[in-house]
Length: 263
Image (cartoon, rainbow, N blue to C red; front, side, top):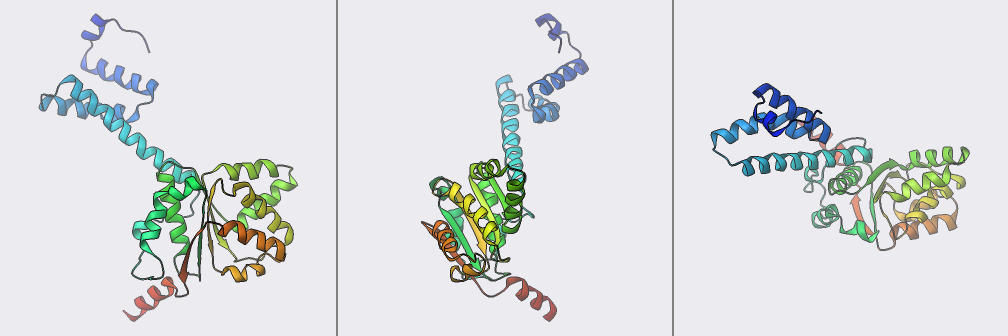
């Protein structure tokens, strides 16, 4: 961008001024001001706004849009498989789920304390919706979230171990503010897989929060983690100071399907 003297700026044509503003916004990375300065300038003229008022409005919309983009970026980086929000959860259809607790969890104080959240219930009872919805709220609050299924995480850890990158991978999962682990209990894990998962839990214990969705009650986790001692250690880590929500056994998806058929 070439430097222009004060007299030169005074003599800029309308088109040259627009071009100079666009170039400056690109250099300073102000995309919202670049896109909207023309409309805002026209509005300021109509409203007889002061220069300060015009500038403050431009800066405000840039900051506001930057925050929106930041939230969207953090949600995208979390890797959620689909969009789910707490506001869309049908609490009336599942009276087992306490709305007050869910909304409190969405505010994120438990994240800073490194507490676990366990969502336990049968398929179709809203566990994944709550897991993703809470995770989305935490990401939009400015924290780093990572979503994965248990099977995908164990496979990733096993591949990392084969490539001698296990420590680096565990550290990466240990750094995020919230790890959302879905579908625990759907597949049985061999001892090697369970040990790998245990290392992630240990890395995060009482320092970083973890939220788990499982279709099996804790008493049945021994079927997933076949080593009794390892199973006991894992249950101990994910339940210590945990917020536990039991979503019940009545499938919301099945109920909705039956309702549509009756119609």
